[in-house]
Image (cartoon, rainbow, N blue to C red; front, top):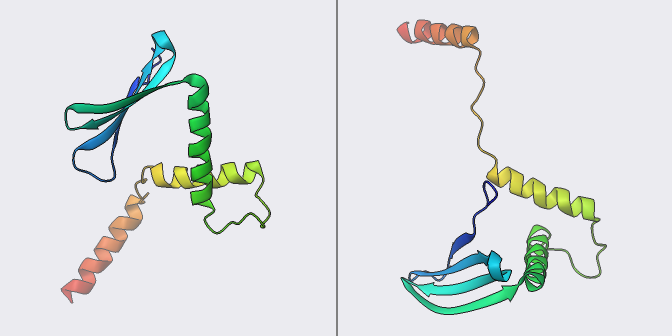
Length: 122
């Protein structure tokens, strides 16, 4: 198995109530199984082929594109693929990028602290 590759994914149901979707990759049958759970009980499952999984990915990409460009209509010119990729990737990068610590120069910081102490003491 590839490092960082998980064969199982749990997604919470937006309706709550201990519902979730479990998605599992089954290499032996080349299927991805979507199973619906309520608590510890599986209430339904749907195995799909890899070909159908690629269609599902197309739907998800289309939904992300529509979410990234919510005001775009059919009559408006469609952005080019590189523009879409930059827009989607840029949005995802901004949301997922860890916040970086502020770089502080110590000598300047000490001068600022010293000047504050002088002002507060007077």
